[in-house]
Image 1 (cartoon, rainbow, N blue to C red):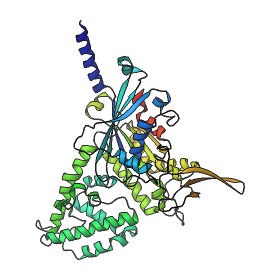
Image 2: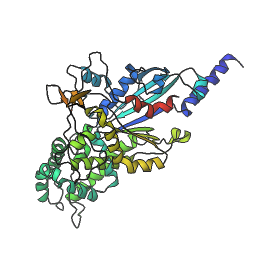
Image 3: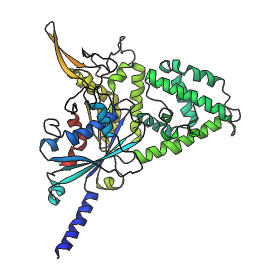
Image 4: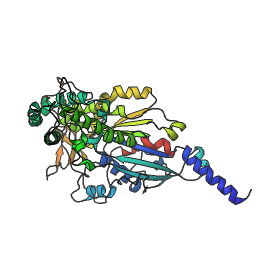
Length: 463
């Protein structure tokens, strides 16, 4: 056999190996608006590409064992989708004073190639080095909240939204819309100007609820971040009680048609294109902010997270699934921003998050999905500081509050270890503080347990 023919056989074998071996991961970074998705992706890229050493990532085995060679960003497959603005996000975190990266306003994607030395198996037999390709998708958390609309018709959706608008936490911000809706004749012939005017009031209501009440379940999400749909008639709808008899040419029928068009033309493609081919998932939850906002918003965010998990494909992975119909076989629940409480409370956060998702986690574990829950901080905004008072050591944190100029040493309250009922909620609430990113002169980012997260999500792909 000639050398060239042998070479061709090797090349063909390598190509087949790439298709059949587990050398590609699509990672879903999921979370409600404000959960820290952009900062998490930025930190993940930075830690792998610029700070991958055994002192910084000691629990990421491929790094600890010296087998990680390098990780770099490579051209993405989807050329019609903007690239995640990693450099701009890093500039925000590294400027003086540092700022959190801007929230995502559109779909972004990013592809990483991680070169490493395989330890065992077919990869080690074929080559001294191997490459794991990692695809990351970033999207507005507001758009994520549209997914439950797929399981509702217009009447069901309207009933649910109106019930929520009349709840105490939202009612003050929804009064103008509810008043105008009261005089709206749903059975009258379609009046485009009236529909547009009232849909604008509804959009203003959603913005006010998001800004002042910080509610999570706001639909349609494109009213908050419309993207390319700015001003489109597709968004000119709002919840409306169903009349006893529906005239096909009525305003109600027009609202119903727009609702269905929104689902079919916006929500379904979003789901089909971005939520059906994930291999691994991390769900980021800002428990501290939810606790700070009180029992109603905490319960709403908890329900939203559990509801959203129904729209991902889970199950134990195998060769055929990887090739044709991938399922999420590892799911990591993260209580993010854990650096904003003392280290002695990190376990409390993890236990609280576990209690919040335990019913869904048990169901997925039975289906063969590997699940873990941890408290972490993708980008640390504080430092731990022990203060002794009257002979008692207190685990404080030190940092700069987001809306203030002065730095402070702060003793955060203890978060609960389980989901509280309204009756169990403390009268004084939970007074947690939002902190700005901490400056770093050498351009590095401090993290808390990012290496644990990387090992859980990627470690088995790098053996």
